[in-house]
Image 1: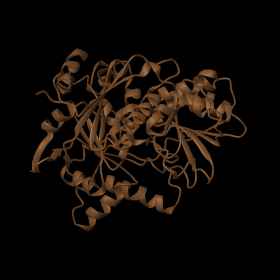
Image 2 (image 1 turned 90 degrees about the vertical axis):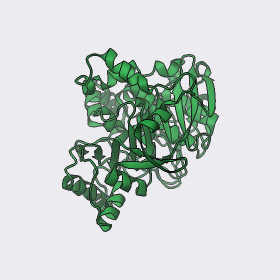
Image 3 (image 1 turned 45 degrees about the horizontal axis):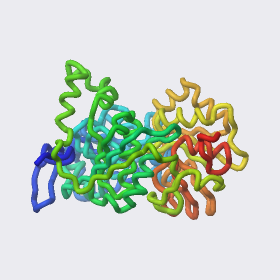
Length: 426
């Protein structure tokens, strides 16, 4: 019997199996940010175990509230900053050099096919786009990862989602993953890996694949994953060209992680995306999705474009194309947060930042702040936000607020219209 990519990664990283079905894996990357890591740091200090297993495999960033908004968040940032300096963590990104974790770490070339990646953040599954097993973990597991470089998992079964057909004009990766979550449900992939396959995935950029994998957790998945291919090689080539004689050699090496043709899946979902429309969420769960036409006309107070889901240059280009030459509605405040300094600079060089500002958007530094209702775009009670983020939980972006998830194109169109709107009609 063949094996899935997840099973191959587990086999290659197996350190121990203390109980049947519980596998302790060696970890290639331990990622850290200032919200969840300080708790782990404090506990390790209290236990007299203030050590790191490998400073080169640990990457850290201040990204959720940046710059700090009050004394409490300043303390969290200081704890991570002091810890990184104390242990000589070279890949630490402080204010001014920092970006959204799940955007800046791939951008720096830290994630590779076949890697195991953990972080105290549920959207760590984003990194599965590179053919890695990447999972969000709790504080205790994060402590062990920092200290010993291992993490225990139950080996997950895999759900294969075949995305067939071709994307209609005006439909993007965000629409696809919202549609998939609508099909699976918020618990449909609990303790499972979602393996995204098919001609639609093959045609996607790495940015689009990261959007797919980013929201695997919203269907309950431990990780989303794509098979590494020439698109992966092209993205990583500036970081790996010294390791391979050619791109063809890199591709041949990466293919060892491909799922076998006779691999066993718990479920296979075949979806023809040719028929889907831009999607929008309603209610307070990510699987509450409708075509934009059924949500059109819903008033919005705020439009937010950014986050680890849709804050990359590809996303900003799409939104700017909709906004060019237009001004957002007087009733709407628009906020855009490029996900990393590089993305910000690229958007500046391409004139995209100017398009946003001319349209009436507030352009902020790279930050996660608005997404989880901590800074840079928190809503008041009763307000509605059209957002390119990944969660529409009750109170997610502010107590008593409503969040509608959508693509950057739909968000930009909604900013112009002042209500949820189909970008294809703007």
